[in-house]
Length: 163
Image 1 (cartoon, helix red, strand yellow):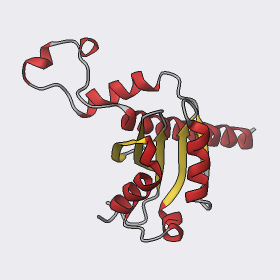
Image 2 (cartoon, one colour):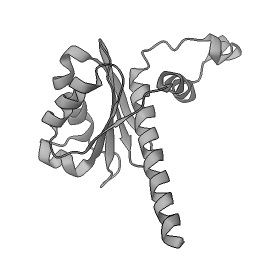
Image 3 (cartoon, helix red, strand yellow):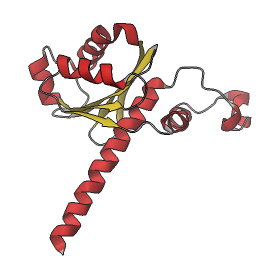
């Protein structure tokens, strides 16, 4: 599968956990390309497979042209996952970001992408539980938080240059 936009750059979001880890591929403009939940025990092969299937990069060096960075949530198991990612992709920048309340944001994102159907539409979303693990959506939230922080830094720089 080729990237949907030629010359598009992506961020890989990782929401590490003890048993399962969320992976998300998000375009530079914040648009979700793909997300998946994998077993943490097989993370090394799962990350490579996830990226190979979605980006058709071929090798680590060509991946560097498409992958702008890797964003990892700083919660459970983040240290070993960060070390693994730096080993797998030494030329790709890795950034850790806070995970506070990312599950709640992931739940809202899930319902935005997959609104309830049928009679479930009548129930308040706060009373419903998504039918899938939210770890992949939490990884999307983390990438979008990073992109928002990046945009804010750029805005501050522009403002400082004006004064």
